Image (tube, rainbow, N blue to C red; front, side, top):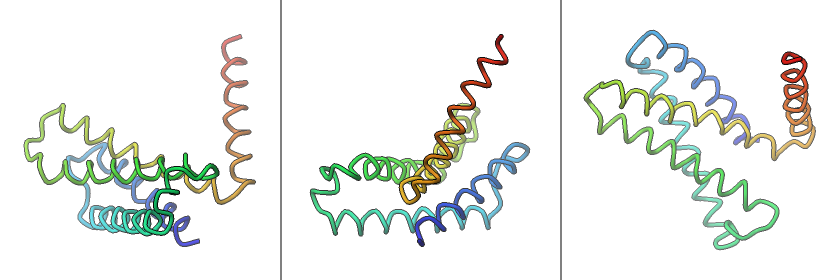
Length: 139
């Protein structure tokens, strides 16, 4: 649905931003605005789900893990956004921390797996084949 589409859109903009930041200190304004929009969308979606499920948001057996994962990703997004406003000194340590936070946002793509069993199986097969490939390369 809409959340899956927004995850893919957000992933595209994170990829664009990551590529841009490899050679520049600041991402383009349009990419920053889209990141703010995506973060706001995910925040509103999370709040709506928390209001709908209340305490079951954290205790529901089938989706508890995904809900906590979503909560952590939204928190990481807001820490990332806050770091842009509160750190004006572009030291190496600060830039490294901000880059790591930005890369953690790509983990949101894993949310799509809960909507599609086939996609989950495909991802699992890729991970399993990577392990075999690593062993084959070491032999």
